Length: 318
Image 1: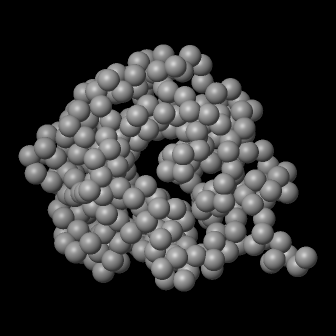
Image 2: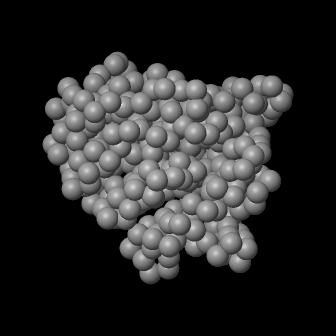
């Protein structure tokens, strides 16, 4: 069998094994909390198919279990994601509950959900508690951003970034960390991270007076809405081949799933948010965060699936 054909037929688990790399847990230091699928955008790359028609979101009783877990284990970081976390009514309760229990609390925002009076209140809360903000912005220009996120999103995103800068977020020398995340708008891989960061910094700074701390570039994961786009456009097989061909063995050691535990809005546990979208439970069976008496020990196997190739392209999902 020629090398290209072997690569096309090789599953992710087989690939990491061939490279002699363990797909097992190290010490669990991070908790990622998916607050639900409600979102004010319906982005073309969303692996969860979150959007305005989705009503799934975390309730206060589940939040109490998350807070209790944070107190038991004292994670190095807690990462709140969605959907759009800002659309969850009880978000301030969760933020105030977990902030004292971790040195690094992260909220992932789509920026437009920070509009309006509630967005202003949440931004002030983030500032008060020194929450790290990770903001999704597909590109440093309007056309590519709106191709993925919809008309009018670019101007709303820039307004939100300027308001955050005015609060001290993303300003050079400020302890209020504002990072950006960029995903490609089509069936291609992202550019090198440092190269993209310099372009974003130059374009956003010169044209809009916007600053930020770091940019992270991630490949789109072929799941959910993005997978359907690939199928409709006839690009699925070629995109999967790009992911396999771009496999970076050095990225495996830093994969988030090796040190992270993920919990969904119902309190169920996973190795990562992508496995969450596929119902691949941590440890192979459904388990609730309320029953967690110890963290998965180092050496615990992690489920492998072909969408994992997207996490090992370039710098990887680290």
